[in-house]
Image (tube, rainbow, N blue to C red):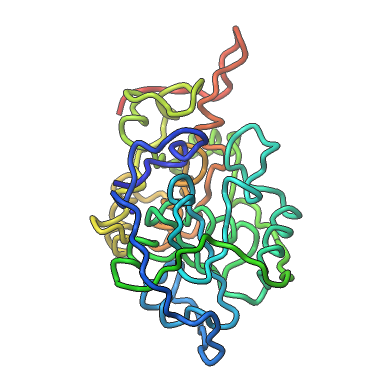
Length: 323
């Protein structure tokens, strides 16, 4: 994916201080057919699929490809052929909530998926233009809504174009029939600040923050005005980009597990936070690949925890600074 720091960096109208790839990918001629009815998808190999896996199945019946790009990458015109828009700045966030990128309710999520033609029996692959960034948020939302046949494209659009695979010069769009998707929310995959406060006091749990080390320490200001700087007392810092190799691919499972173990010891109940619940999902993806089973994402993340209290009143959520 340099890569965006976390969800705070894609907040409108702020520009991201970092972005991987350095330049947006160059479009290649679209050569793959729109439909390939002879191709069978088969089972997903896991929560992550490679570009070869996707290229062999692109256009197969029952395969839905989502482009979950945000910011400048969403505005770019180069897409993987057939991608539909998973718009985290549009209908796939709850704009009535006080914090950005809040997950919509089950009825709203159901309607958004049906408008995009998703069936309950489909297989979904999600990518984004930065590499592995906002695509992980889309994947985690699908899981939280009870849909397991979803995976993230390893390396995203940069890996696809680096492999010489075709792109389309048209933006993501879907004008096909409605689907029959029904959300079946799972409790505990997306949690609130009160749950995180309890987790911080739980010796069997660990809270990991995906923001940059400077923002975690409070030496760099938050990109969203009005938020306090620093981190939750007791949280540990694992910047999301450290789970990826220099080419933007996720590191092997053994390396991922070692990275988590170095920070959490033998604690197996992991909670993830970031700027607004987006790059925390990259940590959730890494933990899933590493074999962790009890994992959750703080939906409000620092956009909620970092809010100051009312005038003359301390916030209910404590903040500390330093490494």
